[in-house]
Length: 165
Image 1 (cartoon, rainbow, N blue to C red):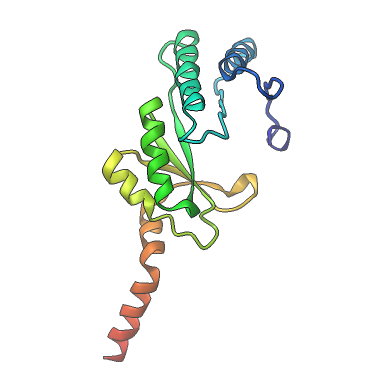
Image 2: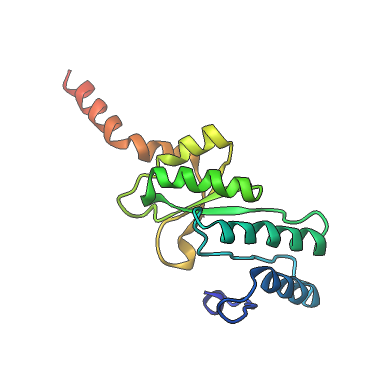
């Protein structure tokens, strides 16, 4: 993905310490005078305690190397997972302060209604939505459009019933 969007990628071999990768990424960003650094810790499962503990270590490294950081901690949730997304959000927010949700796979049949519960129970806003596989398919979350999408079928049925009456 880095090549597709034209950005530098810092990576280590598989099995490397994620905090070391993040440290090298920060050094690289500083040396290039970059104003944005995205640290992707993909592949975390909330039931893997060691992986969740790594997140806490990653956060400590970021805070030590960049005072005031991280500025944004986004949790990517698959819209097709339903209630599992709530479990993920709870566990991740215990390991690190999640500032927003990225809801992926919203282009499929999933409606992503679980985000209402996450927002209500954990007070974590949805910031972005993934609507496909292309780079341009990541969009800013539009709450009005989302709510309409959740209830579109009911609204259309109601409108039809009203028109028939």
